[in-house]
Length: 59
Image (cartoon, rainbow, N blue to C red):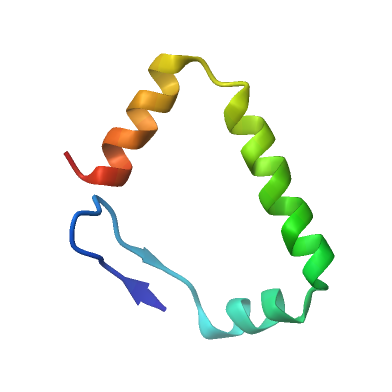
């Protein structure tokens, strides 16, 4: 899977097999991973968050 949206500053690639394996994981586990990632981001200081946002926006 390739993705390049307008206004985004990066491209990523996911092998089809990896994506299919991920989709087999229970939804509660995938949501838990998302929640944990969000909790991790909350612990970052403002400078790190701002830097991440710059990369996301591609500016």
